[in-house]
Image (cartoon, rainbow, N blue to C red; front, side, top):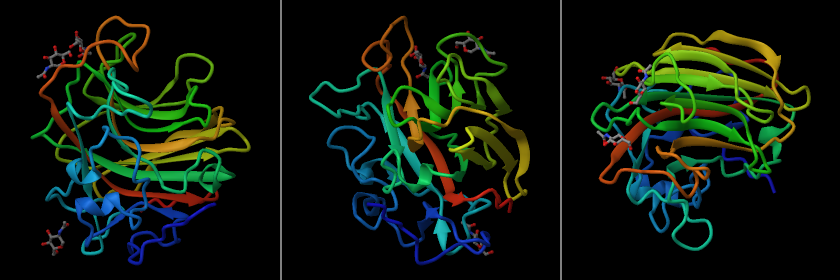
Length: 281
Ligand SMILES: *[C@@H]1O[C@H](CO)[C@@H](O)[C@H](O)[C@H]1NC(C)=O
Ligand SMILES: *[C@@H]1O[C@H](CO)[C@@H](O)[C@H](O)[C@H]1NC(C)=O
Ligand SMILES: *[C@@H]1O[C@H](CO)[C@@H](O)[C@H](O)[C@H]1NC(C)=O
């Protein structure tokens, strides 16, 4: 059953009503994410027995491109040593540290992954709780319904295999269904500014197109529509997934994760629109 969570206060910046709205009303507390008022799944993906109230905070940063000052606000997701997702029995996914929100309606094959859909989000670094760029991170991604691949991934940090222009960058990658993903856009993860994205997937035509800007600048095309396998549909993840370092054939359960971490990323302006028209400002 598809449940739409259209927030009572829609940000004025978006002219067309979003199909699904993940922007957070100013009245939200961190504990709101643990209740049914949240537009996100309350159970996944986070450390076992850790409430969102302990994971989410509200930083004092200016609202971004698609969050309207005084109606919706940015939020910060964090990871620490407790961020071990345990879908079955303990010890859980000890190779990962993860705190990712998923739209509550997003079953893997619901309306958010049918036809043409565009995920919008903005993100910024928290210099007081930095990433460790010796690790690879997945910070926004669409994982296929069979959990075997990603339709796209926004990554940062040092890739486990190979090298990049700059570890401290944001790289938008296409599908990895049939081998290594192609880098579609690569920008330094500059602190102190918002990085705004829109990624449009045609789930019937298997294409991807992307737009990007900083701060309040209108989005500009950075990846023209290209072939990109989207037949696996899937679930949108907005949040932090930190991969292990070290040699292992099983990154979910193996590798190395240092202890004593406290890392965060600020997100805002998350929504999905349907159809080929993309809201640019
Ligand atoms: C909201 O607007 C007021 C008045 O312009 C400004 O002082 C404040 O910093 C803004 N807050 C955010 C979070 O952008
Ligand atoms: C970053 O990660 C590496 C590899 O896990 C670890 O050796 C190092 O201590 C970490 N650095 C910080 C500042 O936590
Ligand atoms: C990425 O990080 C690794 C490990 O810290 C380092 O050896 C490498 O030089 C870095 N690459 C770039 C391009 O900075």
